[in-house]
Length: 102
Image (tube, rainbow, N blue to C red; front, side, top):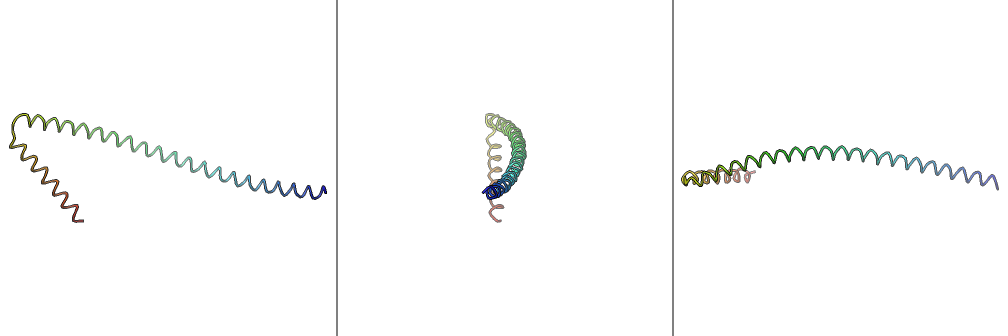
């Protein structure tokens, strides 16, 4: 019986070693995936931060443009304002026409 017991113990130990190697390989793979995800998240956070700065500067430019337009409308020069609105509408429809052709 001790021979059977030793053989069973050896088989169980071999099976445990095989399963342990499998778990170690999977853990290594998970670590690699986690590190890749970390790099990707850091890269995307950097891009979002850059975009935030770009949007802030665009918002400042838009705000100053709107302030200038408000000053111009208060000055009473309605003919000039009509030309600006007509020009903006023309550009909008031109862009719409050009994009709808594709």
